[in-house]
Amino acid sequence: MNETIVSGMRPTGKLHLGHYLGVIKNWVQLQEKYNCYFFVADWHALTTKYDNTEELKQNTKDVVMDWLACGIDPEKSTIYVQSLVPEIAELNIYLGMITPQNWVERDPTLKDMAKILKTKEGQGTQVNYGLMGYPVLMSADIMMMNSKYVPVGIDQVAHIEITRDIARRFNNLYGEFFNEPEPILNECSLICGLDGNKMGKSFKNDIKISDTDIETSKKVMTAITDRSRLRKDDLGHPDECEVAFKYWKIFGSDDEVKTIRCECEKGLRGCAQCKRELGDKINLCLSEIREKRRYYEQHPEIVDEIIEKGSQKARIKAKEVLQNVRDLVKMY
Ligand code: TRP
Image (cartoon, rainbow, N blue to C red; front, side, top):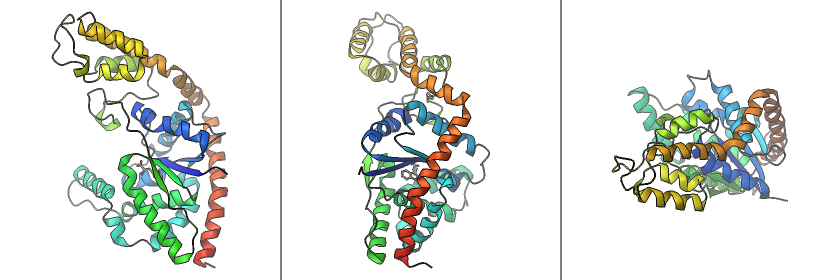
């Protein structure tokens, strides 16, 4: 019996290449070896976006379509939506009862989120009860499938620590049942944004998985290159090229990278030409993924069915775990 993995993403809308290279590619590999559950954390989205739910449904679908396009296979992995597995909410109650307040209060990720909220909405913004419960709900997500491993970014590790503490406390109080889940660190995404900073939707420096070729090419033309280079026949410094050459190293073959380095250093390759070719290269690398993405866009009923079926499957496992929990806690 394969070990179980759970991971989730908040429905932030269409995903970008940072998500693909840093997270989803990892998941695609994991699904070959593990019993994987991947879900859209729509309740977690409400912890901060409770006042803006207009796009929640579409964002959830967009995330799932991006996963499918990138190769998450519903035959191998269980794809579901958190709020379609209400058992998680019940588990969240039991876990909340045994989680000391100071465990959530000292969660560094939560402190950061509270800070961002405060600056965004002006002073005096409350941290809601639901946001305080973020790590407990996340523990419920993970423990609902009695997961052994959780692939996450480094920023989420503090949350997994709390999950381990909660699982241990549950086991001590009611009897050994839950795994103490361990993080599997996502390889840090190599790809920076078009401006050289971390790629992020809110920084407007991202290339979306679902962008068209034309959109991609246009965006790539804005990428920062070697700032010291003014004319196209100036000798270039690929290692000081802030974005374009880094992208080549991700998307190009070894030979291509070698040729480009050589031509750039000799002043035989202007930055505009270089970025035109880079845009074409990225589009070529993404062509299959994008074709698949378009297929799902044109067949939303297939996406709905995948979500529906996956959520049903997740509920079967969730019900089984919940029955055990209810028995251990000695509920009626
Ligand atoms: N907090 C995670 C994030 O923002 C999303 C998430 C919610 C999650 N529940 C989870 C990730 C359970 C892994 C396991 O990225």
